Image (cartoon, rainbow, N blue to C red; front, side, top):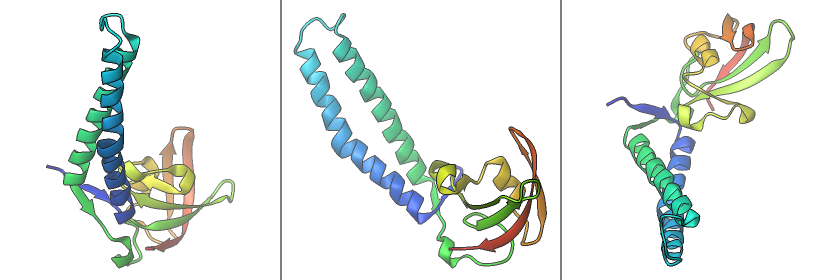
Length: 157
């Protein structure tokens, strides 16, 4: 059983989603199924089929969340230190071609959100950064072609 690394914030986010799906979404879907069932003939009842599909999707996500939370390896980033990049590190990079600066935090797959500066531990850029330190240059094979970055700063916050 493979552990799933995540930050405390990511763990809380998954727990909140699980609680919402179990205590709010599940009863709402059951009510929708009951209402649609009351309309009669189920073979041609689009509302019933849509509600059953929604129920299937919700129950599948609940199972997925329960599995992820049971295998969670919650890593408190504030207790980490060092000069090399690892899970949880916040890394400031500069693109060597455009001089554009970017800051990313390396997080678990479930909590990745590039728009908010959180990249997945399994992403190409995170894999290229792991084990490197300030001042190092890395080349990342990105979908748009290879990109070269210099690591300006590594911190754990």
